[in-house]
Image (cartoon, rainbow, N blue to C red; front, side):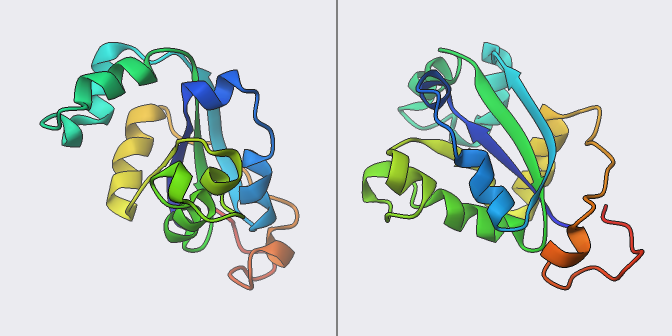
Length: 152
């Protein structure tokens, strides 16, 4: 089953926004890992290493270190692509209503590919993910599961 990495950034945490997690749950995705963490500089630089040549890199690293973030892993069918749609366009001010960025005018991070998700999940959750199966995965999983089939 596919996984994606989602990060609620420091300003979103400070605003106490609720409803972000429920948007993924309402789409039938399953939370596999979640933690509130203060990010250290070396870790932030590693996470955003693909942007290290950009002029805004140090500002981005400083921003991620400015307060706690909520790191999450979600599981489900096509969750990377669907997660990006739930989040909305990269620029919160250009995002459509009905998306997290469009409704809350926040900057939230989501993996842009299965490969990125795999890398980010192993970085943020090196001990692995929770091994559990929702009792309603059969009904909510979009027909992806057969009765008695493991959801992991």
